[in-house]
Amino acid sequence: MFKTVNSRIAIASALAAVVLAACGAPAATQAPAAKQKAPAAEQKASAEPIIIGVSGPLTGQNARYGEQWKKGFDLALEEINGAGGVDGRKIEYVFEDSQSDPKQSVVVAQKFVADPRIIVEIGDFSSGASMAASKIYERGGLVQFGMTNSHPDFTKGGGEYTWSNSSTQSQLAPALAELAVATVGLKKPAVLYLNTDWGKTTYQLFEEKAKSLGAEIVANEAYLPEEKDFKSALTRVRDANPDGLILISYQADGALIVQQLEGAGLKLPIVGASSLQSPDFLKLGGKAAEGVLLRAQFLPSDPQPRIKNFVDKYKAKYNETPDFFATHAYDTIKLLKEEIKIGGATREGVKTALAQLKDVPSVIYGKVTFDKETRRVSDPTFVNLVVKNGEFVAWEGK
Image (spheres, rainbow, N blue to C red):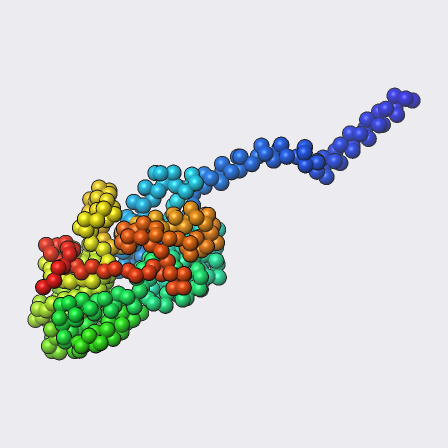
């Protein structure tokens, strides 16, 4: 009888232990198990790469710009990841080809917002393609960082989630007019410009500044991005008897225009927007590009250590001289790395850190600090370039 009671007590005790285990053991007994699991979880998290989304052109008429972006990205990431990344995590990017088309950039934005791995987006190439997607990024709480978005309204489209290290057309177009009118001395220039949001806005700002400097625009011709034959436009320009030609163009169309000038009977000083500073303009334009002047922001032959060191590394990797777009891409990745270090590898962390960045080293700008109101880099500087012997070199004046 005593033995049976003891057995029942033992069974009851065992059942009680099972119930206690199911309900949760006291903190003192549960803690060791949690401590054993935490390091493994942390190691797994630290091994996962930090992902940046890139929306830009890899095919289509602006594909060359996307190719140059990738070269700058890859060189920067080679250096960052080779030095241990950020807190032991490598940075990687996912590049979606938008062809710089607003319809495609919207699709890419929806894809990136839905991907929780992506903590910040770079792009798109054109302001129009970028601005079409800004509200999607804002609603998704994902920073849209524009490298080449010069439209003055770009950073207004997505509130606190749109930032850019690009100069604006409000800065670039007047600077172009100052070179053409005040420095070169053009009084009656003609202007050819892309019939896009970027081209029209740049032309309007250029015209306003040029007139204030005493110049008269004797002819202005808008053309579509896909145009190849500029004979009619150049004939009208010739008949207006200008003393110079302004190109608000991209590299491929700009190269076609300079090639067709001789056939139209035109031999004029040519001053181009900074968007012409691309290896393709030199390659496609050939001898016809010789003598073209640019108001730009980057001179590869500049002997300043920050520029020379970058150019040497770039040439060693790619066996070519970097253009503005590859350099700007390099700068942007280095800038985002600093944001991640400050705010952490999260979407909200990136947004918070942008406002805190101060004097971040930059090949193009020297140092970068953002204006918190405009979410742009303050006080960009410019250099005058000329195409000489198939290269962009400093232009010292007439």
